[in-house]
Length: 150
Image (cartoon, rainbow, N blue to C red; front, side, top):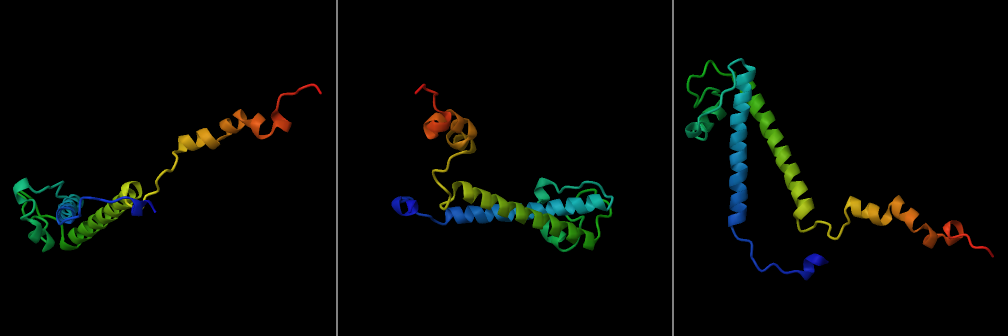
């Protein structure tokens, strides 16, 4: 109902979906690097992170199964199966976290959010026990009203 009453004068264009797509691709590519670093750590090669210049150019090598792609002075690197397992676990974790973040954001600021809801403190102030005790003589004057001699 409220959605029908308001009008958005700014049309949605290609910039916002493009920015969201780029952000998703950057997070997923950094997730591949994080999965590789965890795989190398678990294989005993230590924590290895690609230099900034090799961060994105080493992705084809990492996705090809080479855990030492783009690393300078790296040891033997993790095996292919450990590398893929770590990358998949990290990517799934990032996808779940992103989905949870989108859900929380849409519940808070999205077009279908609940408007006009009282906070927990406001509900306690209006409907809580302290308020009921305060207005008890008005609600039930026969039980909590002033005792007057008849």
